[in-house]
Image (cartoon, rainbow over all chains, first blue to last red):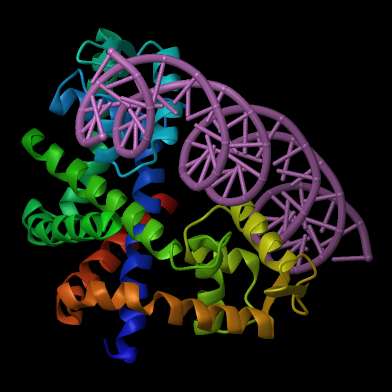
Length: 149
Length: 149
DNA sequence: TGTAGATAGTGCGAAATCGAACTATAAAGA
DNA sequence: TCTTTATAGTTCGATTTCGCACTATCTACA
C-alpha cells in the first residue's frame, strides 16, 4: 500500500466511528431513560431472528466479547425483558427468550424512534443507503475473517 | 417515511456499529498494550491538525462528551504523551500540546498498524473508500446539526 | 463598573466494556 | 471407558464512558 494512502483509511474508520457515536446518541435520546443501544439491539435481534439463541450466538452477531453479553443480558433479565433458560441441547449453555414485555418494549422503541429515522430518511433516501450497505457488509465480513485468522 | 423502510435504517446503523467495533479491535491489536483507539485518535488528531487545541475542541471533533475527553487527556498526560497548559487567550481553558514522546508514539502506531490497513486496502482499494466517504461525511454533518437543533 | 448568564474544565458516582481466570459440560481420541 | 482438550457462561477487577453538579472565568449589557 502506498504510504500516502494510509490517512485515507484512518479517515474512513474515524468517520465510521463518529457516525456510530452520533447515531447512537441520537437514537438513545428517543429511548426510555436507562435503555442503551446495546440493550435495544439485543431485543431487536431476538425479535427479528427469533428466540432461543444462545448468549454466545448473540455476542458473535454483534462482534462483542461474551463477558459484555453476559452483563447486557443480566440487565435485560432484571428488567423482565428476557428470560434465560437452560439449553436443552447443551448443558453448558442457555437460551435467551423474549418476554411479552420485551417484545412490546422493542416494538415501542421502534415507534418512538421512527421520527428520528424519518428525518434522516428525508435527507438520505433508501436508495442512497442501499448503494453503500453492501460495501459496508462486505467490509464487515472481511474484517470478521481477518480477526479469526 | 414508509414503515417498511425502517428496518433498512436500523440495519445501516447496526452495520456501522459492527464495522466500528471490528475495526477498533483489529486496530488496537496492533497498538502497544494499554493504548486504546481513543488514546491514539487524540494523538493523531493533534499531530494532523496541530497542537494547542483546547480539550473542548478535541471533544467536539470526535463528538464525545467533554468529561470523556477530560479522562482521556489525563491518561495521556500521565503517560507523558501530551502536556496541558493554561490557554493564554482564555483563563477558563487549557491547550493540549503533544510531547516529543507523544509524536513518536503516534508515528510508531501508524507504522505498526500499516500492515493491518495494507491488508484491508488490498481488498478495498482507495477508490472504493473515496466513493462512500463523502456520503458518510455528509451523514455526520447532518446528524451533527440535528443534535444541536 | 457591576451583575446575570454563558462557557471551559473537573470531581464524582453509576453504568458499560472487556480481558483473565474460573467452573461446568461436551467432544475427541487413546 | 477414561482422559484430554475444547467450549459456554460467569465472576472479578480494571478501565472507559458519561451525566450531573460544581468552580472559575468570560461575555453581554444595564
